[in-house]
Image 1: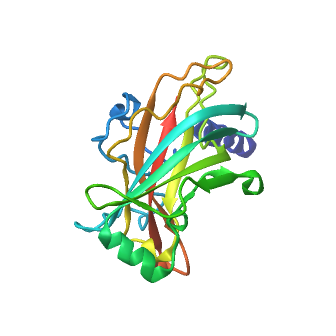
Image 2 (image 1 turned 30 degrees about the horizontal axis):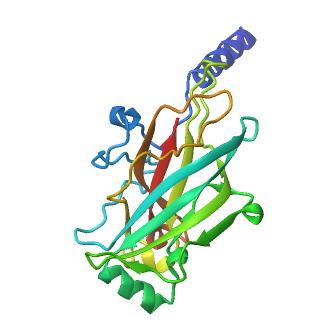
Length: 239
C-alpha cells in the first residue's frame, strides 16, 4: 500500500510539472502584434520575484530616442536561437541628456548597447558622421550602421513547421550614469520611426509581415536588494 501511495504522488507531481508553462520574459499585449505604432502602450516584463516589479521612471526624466531599420536579415539558426542582421540605428537627444553625456565623458555610441547581441567579436558598428548633428529643433542626432548577430529569446514550436518566429533586436541604456537610480535616462521610439524592415529584409522560407516596438527595462542585482539598478530597454521585433 505504501508503495502504491508513493507511485500515485509521483504521478500527480509529474502531471503538474508538464502542465506548467514557462513564463516569458515579456508580456505580449494584444496591440503588440499590430502594425508599428509609436503610441503603443508599455508592455511590462513579468516580475520573477516580489522585488522585481515594474519601476516607473520619473516625470521629466531625460529621454533618448532610438530608431532602427533592418536592411538585411539572414542566417537564421533555430537550433541556437540566433539570427544575423545588418542595418542602421539612430539616436536623438536633448540638451539635458547632452550635459549628462559630456559630464560622463561618453561618446554617443556608448550611451546604448545591443542587449541580446551574441558573438560580439564578429559584430561591426560605425558612425555615419564624426560628430553628432543638430536638428532644426536643437536636438542632437547621430546615425550608425551595424552588422551583428542576435539571440531569439522565445521560439514557439507548437505549430512547427509553420511556426511564427519573432526576431528581436533589444537596445538598452549602457552606462551606470543612465540607470534609473542615477540620471534615469529613458529610451523612447524615435519620432521618425517607420517600418523596421527595408527593401532587402526578406528571410528565406519566411514571410515578414509585422513589426512593433516593446518598451521594457532590465534589472541587475548588484549586491542585495538595496543595490539593484534598472536600465531602460526598447525591443524592436519583426515577425
